[in-house]
Amino acid sequence: MAIWLDDLLEQVAAAIALADSETETGKRLALIIVDNAVEFLMKAYIENETQLIGSGKTIKKPDWDEMKQNFRKVLEFVFKQFPSNTASMTDILSYHNLRNDLYHGAKPLSVQPKQVANYTEQFKMLLNDLQKFKMSDDQWRKQAYDVSQMIAQKEAQTKIVISYSNENGQTRFKTDVTMKDTEAIMHTIHAYSHYFGTEPSVEDIEGILTSGHALEKSVISKRLDHLRTQKKLLKTKRLLDPKAVETLRKKFAIIFY
Figure 1 (cartoon, rainbow, N blue to C red):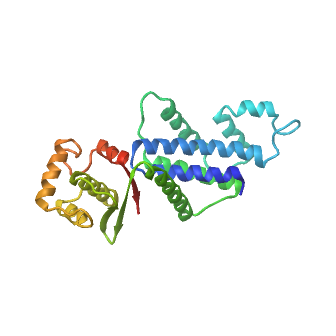
Figure 2: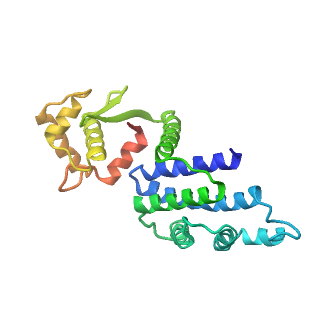
Figure 3: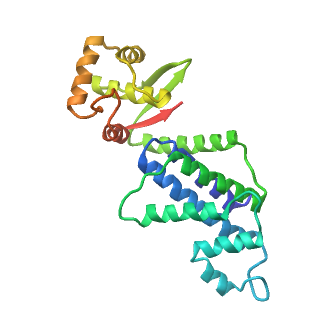
């Protein structure tokens, strides 16, 4: 495998991991990374894998160097030289324009996981069209998992490591440090909502806490009231406020299993 391709796969795997991070920043960065990967793929392929650049060839080097400064021109050149039956030039350009809005705009924009997933699929199709390189969904997930683990290991140097798991419908969290009651409850709610997409009942929280930070139901209710007073819970649901999630992530390196 070419060195530039190996680096490219790691970039997109990092984007997939960021898109799954449940943060707006993570999703925005994921789209930007995928866009960078698409641009890098096109330029690296033309420069390293073809004989199109040079005197007497398809494009002179000074003209290519100028073209490289314009994403749209590079995209049009690649599709003209290597017509694709799968990747869409229109879709790629649309996502690139969204990336420009994210990167250069004065106002942060929301990015939906589906947008990142769709742009990633465009990258994969273009990669297969140009390099005849393809990985299964399981291989991509494994690559993204490996990258997330490397990131977690780096975080673990400065943060407290905590792991979430969900086996047979039973959510658990595990860490080697002693936490405050409120922190344990916050992790419980965060883990439950991650796996089930909804708020836990007090009974759910009580059951999860038995794995390492057992609390009586009356204590849990008092701590929940305290968290709501501190605006760490949403007003009408037993779910963490986004700022509370960020607070957890600043202190803990959370690993999902």
